[in-house]
Length: 400
Image (cartoon, rainbow, N blue to C red; front, side, top):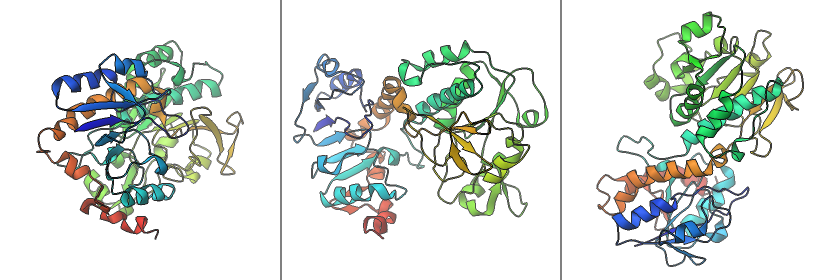
């Protein structure tokens, strides 16, 4: 078996990689029967020379590899037929812009394993960059607050080297007694929480957050039953919400009335109700000044996320009274940060963390007969067809 680590070809350039040089060196030691090749790249956060130093072959031709690992979507014309591929295809929600990619994968009889589909026996995701999205997103949200109110200016995350560097820059700043509400308890939200805790911002209960005033910055972390309620007034539970999302409506207004910064780290399904509505943002008692939409669902549950922003231009203004984008310097604007590729700003940390998860959960499956079903569950396509778990995508593939 021969593994290949492909270069990233999507624009803007992504410097992340599935395996670091050290991880591939360890793989060679633990599994001497596997051959490994890395495709030459001048954008990767780790240089070709660092892979060569670990005894890894670096080349331009990857056609002799059996399994190919990448991060972002592979352009259609770069796909090699009859191979196994691992990358984020961004097709699971029937994203229109990637339909041709999935059609090509099927036509070329490629076995696709999307990183998002790698789950355990309970269908809980095992790997991802979510933690690093949360870390960078929280940093960007606080950076936006400092810039908007001319309190402080700190560098872009992409110019810093690590999470520790981000925390160090933030700890030097003096924040007024603001309130920050953080949604979610998954990897994204917990990454954002790492930043808030690293800054020693005090975490308080929901009840105290909603009713008390503080002389220091504070934050609270809330889940679906805190920002949604059942329309019929019946008790809300997480299990019921995920089974019946259309039976729920937003209960977030109580937070929008007291929060200065909203950090959105929740997971949002297609049928989920809105969280922060246009009406809430237009209310005279809405206090929100910055929205760091780390989850970045455009035209989704957060009314002011009217577009995805970029690493180069991360902030824009949203004018609630007119429901439109304006410069974030506009006096009536809420500052929105909705970068959709946040982990790219910490490519070294993100690659190291991702590779560790991949080495722990996925690589063993290649050598133990996939005894835990990791590969079987995550396989989206096989021999020119969708696998059973992903047959729901057939109408999407057919262009319907």
